[in-house]
Length: 392
Image (cartoon, rainbow, N blue to C red; front, side, top):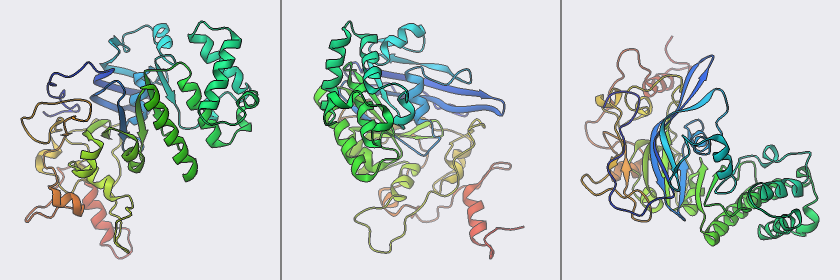
């Protein structure tokens, strides 16, 4: 298939009805500088109680995907221009805004990156939590306050009755994130979306917050979508991982399978660009060469082709659809038996994935067609020039 969008995923085998079904989701931002192709026809499922990781570089469409799911895209620029989002049997894309507002908070909760900008600085935590609870539940203010105290205690905030009267700026960063988790769990949602929940927190607090989210979602049976660029976080937090690049899902597998057999060049690059405890001393990291694409340009062919050392000629013109790593197997979309899918014409071998580069004899990356940017060639030219500036 040639064009900007990947084909729909293969037909799934018979599996239980998922809680969330995203099909062919397309999101665009219409700006003065042009159209931003933020999400390009992605499809995925989340089962009840499942924990899904969404990983990729900044700007790949992770956060936009989830803002589209809950209909919180910035207006008027952002809009859903195709696809469906079925949550518990209801299509959120075509639902009235008032009905979506009822589902947000009650059935789908979101933890944003920066709790200081998500909490109202001029209202106490008590006022904000009570407002959230009363808006969706027929409870008195006293009953809602008792629930708020219970929730703050549940997320590990000491003296919850006293701290309830505090303003957000009177909490540390980690405590503010705990307040956000408490608010997200206030109405016992079916799905929680955590968007980089440990951004700007130190390592110790990060571990505490992640452990808290993991424990509480397990205890309540809440499904989780965890958005992050940190593969170390999803390794211990998720059942399954979607790898996103330039608005596409390029690989999806169970967490164990993805780390054991990464099969898309971009996934291999992500894994080799982070430090490992078992690396030999002095062994360098292998960065992903080049830059992410300009999302104002609709992709022609595989969007990763300009940066990919495994690319073939077809990669420049034909964007492959997600397909099973093992051809012909029945596709399972969720759970521990989920099928490993990739969107790649020339997947790395197991040895190449371990090495982080092509090792097969005779392979060279297919050159870019006239007029298209070749990030590998550009970097090679710069590296080979004496002053580091490349040819004149």
